[in-house]
Image (cartoon, rainbow, N blue to C red; front, side, top):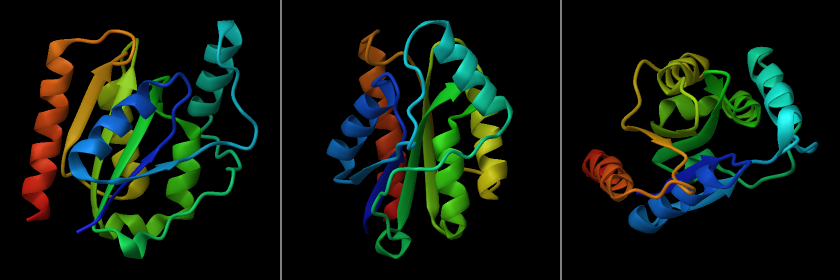
Length: 164
């Protein structure tokens, strides 16, 4: 049983958590990146990213290697932007609609809120009612807390159980 972690990370939080999950599950990490990078600091970061999320944009992605047939479980990792998932993940889902037939889990990293709404929007966009496991973490790379590892462990334990 193979697992893929598909993730987009601007500030490094989502990549940080993807790495921890990959280490625990022995999963493949597949980074999704837009051709045109979003501003990563200052007001432009929030204006540009927020607008893109609200407008449900689907940016063109840099080439990535992903074959859904190789995986039983897909984990999607994204930052939360304007109570939604990041636009590069929207593009990935559109390009890989067949993932809805897989076991899907998701994690989000955020600073200001909107994690539940982002998860719900992602489920609807993929076309599933539930995820096998969900994880939401507040700035995990910058605000390292002991409970973060426990939450990751719990998330991974659920997925290990689902895969058996």
